[in-house]
Structures are given as C-alpha cells and as structure tokens.
Amino acid sequence: MAKTSSFFLLLAVLIATRGDAQWSQEERDRINKLNQEDHQLMMQLLGLTEIRPGPSGNPQAPNAANTDESKATPYTSLPDPLLFNNGTPVKTAAQWEKRKLEIFEDFDREIYGRVPPNTPAVAWEVVSVKDTMNGDFSVKTSQLIGHVDHAAYPAITVDIEMTLTLPQKISKPVPVIMEFGWNFPMRWRPPQQEGPTWQQQVLNKGWGYAILVPTSIQADHGAGLCEGIIGLVNKGQPRRLDDWGALRAWAWGASRAMDYFATNPDVDETRIVIEGLSRYGKAAIVTLAYEPRIAIGLIGSSGAGGAKILRRLLGEQVENLAASGEYHWFAPNFIKYAGPLTAMDLPVDAHQLVALCAPRPVFISVGSPDVEGQWVDAKGMFLAGVHAGPVYELLGAKGLATDIFPPQETSLIDGEIAFRQHAGGHTVGPNWPTFLQFAERYFQ
Ligand code: GCU
Image (cartoon, rainbow, N blue to C red; front, side, top):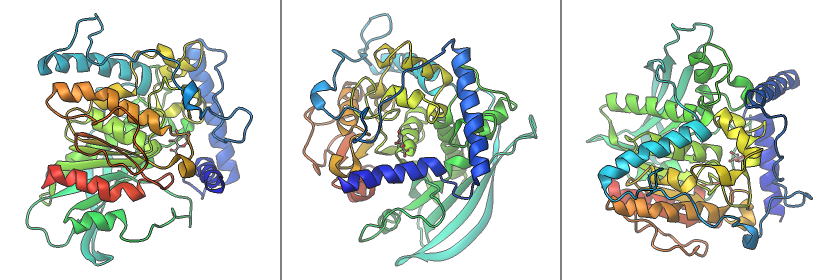
C-alpha cells in the first residue's frame, strides 16, 4: 500500500509541476486560469454546461476508481475493426487499407484530433556533438534542434529539442530507440534500478537512442494550446472542435525526428522504435499508429487514452481524460463523451488504435497492480492487444497467443503483438530486457 500511495504522490508532484519546477506560484496560477478558460470555451463550443466528474486515482478516496474486475465490463461487444461502417466484412489486406481510413477518421474527429494539412517545415540543426562515455560504452551524443518555420506567424517560435546518442564505432547504419523524454522536476530523478540502464542495454546491442522532448513541441497543459505547434498553425487562436491535441502534436514531432533520421547516414531509419511511458506511452501508440515509417512500438503503462479499452469501467475513465487537466491531449470533441455521451458511444476503441499499427510489432508494457496501482488498467491494455489480433492475422502477422490475462512476468512475445506485466511500478524499467529480445528478432 505504501508503494501505491507513493506512486500517487509522485504523480501528483509531476502533474502539479508539469515537469517545470522552475515555475513560480504566479506562473502556475496564470497557467491554471488560462487552462480553465480554454476548457470552458471548448465546452461552450460543444454546447455543454457540465460534464460528469471522473473517479479519483486515490484508492482511499470515497469516489475511488473501480478496481473490481467483476464490475469492469459494462459492454457486451466492442466495435469490430474488421467490419466497414456499412456492415460489410473486411476480408483482404486491400480492404483493410480502406477500412483503416474509416477508423483513422473516427479517431481524428472524435478522439485525437486532426493534424492540419499545412504544418510548417522543420529545419534540423546539430547544435553540438560530444564524444563521451555512457557506462562502459564510448558514444557520440548530438544535441539537435528542429527549428519550425514560423514565417506564417512569427509571434510563436517552436524549437524541437532532441538528443541523439550513437555508439562510437559504427560499421553500418544502426537502429535507434526514440523515447518521448520526461522533463522531471529539478533535482528529482526516477528511482534507479540495479544493473545497466535501458540506454546501456541498447548500446550493448550496438544500437543508438534518441530522447525527444515533447514539451518543446507542445506544452503539456491547456493554457499552451494557443502556442506550441498547435498555436503556431492556428496563428494563436483557440482550437476548432476537431483540431489536434497534444498527443498528436507530440507524434507529429516524432515524425519530424524521423525526417531527420533519414538524413543521418549513421541511423537506419527503417529500424526505429518509438517508446514512452504514461502520457508519453499514449503518445507512443498514437505515433506508431499514425507514422508508418516507425518499425516497432514499446508502449509503457499508457492507460486510458493509450492502449486501454476506454469502455472498461476500471481505473482511469473518459471523464478524467475530458476534465481540464487532461483534455488538451485530445481533440475538443472528445470532451462530449463525459456528458451527455459516454465511453459506450465512442465510434472506436483502443483495440482499433493497436490495429492501426498492424502488422508492425508492438509491445504493451505495464507494471504490477500492487506497486503501480490499478489506474492504468493492465487488463484493459491486454484486451486491446487481444482484440487487435484479428487485424494482425488478416495481414499475415501473429497476435497474442492467448486471450486469458497472464500471470505477472509472463512474456507473451511470440507474435507481433507482445504483452508483459513486470513486477515493478510505473516504469518500463524491468521490461527492457524482454523488449530488446523481442525487437532483436526484427532488427538482426
Ligand atoms: C495521470 C493521468 C494518466 C497519465 C499519467 C501520466 O495519472 O491520469 O492518464 O498517463 O498521469 O502521464 O503520468
């Protein structure tokens, strides 16, 4: 229990500071005010006067989110990825290409929002290159900035920050693991595990890694929606109801990083992994779904809005995602599913997001409910993997070997959809060795 509550404490700190401990109280008040105003404005545009509040992530709270599996399945069926909207079945890979467009359209309009057609160009600059060591490995680390063209609206500047680390000795272009990097509060670092870090495990394979800073693309709060890449394209104006949210903006940034990788002769741009945890796990699955050039996804504890079935009544709910603290991740249209509509009215659910990644390998990672808590809904993510299976199989790939939720630390990695629940907390940490074993099958 102590561990569970420390997880929530940590989350509270991360959310309160939103990664920027240097903000003064005044700055935080200003951001909160703008955030509330934008959320209110979106509700107004949707004709909503109130929405249902979500349950609490604190298991001790009187309105704690459900953790009882017997109450988790209020639905009798999920939208079928292999049925066209008009009811005809999808039987061939060619038909799936068409069906995919319907599913993308639903996710675009109702959940993640549309990326505008006129996003500006990005010019990558290598700011510095340093020869250094990571543990026992000699590496070359480049600091990069992706300058977004803002000629159309010079009042907003967007400079995408990324660090790329490659092994010193390279005989041919190497795979790269791209992570959506957390910007932790000053002096705070996530608890270190024993043994090599994930970066060292990656270097040990002879591969490289890149850390992309999502908040340099789009701020992680509603107050920032008139700035960042979303604000730049909208020339500082508030969003339309089907405009993109931060998840798609972060994914757009990852696509621009892909453009850069294609120009770097040391990087094999056909062997790039996207990885992220929590909100950045959501961003990672959205990236994999929307960016066909990415080879593999490692989706860490993504929970609701990521790989978790939204119709499930366990852990975080649509009502939480639609509230003022998280709505900015999504299209404004998504707010209406917290009233009058419900999750049951969504035209698509998370298994279809996983299906959009098919047939590319995707690894769904989660921690132990005793340590991580149940907010992320491990089984809800497993089920999204299960129900994406038929699409993978239609395309000649393999889904999960079972539809029975496996015991902790079972590695389901034989197919292209992989799942593993490790024994630790809200981290990808203990799953890295299993993931790298899985990825190696495709990269060697
Ligand atoms: C909160 C939020 C989750 C999110 C997490 C995080 O817990 O409810 O949806 O994944 O923060 O990103 O840290």
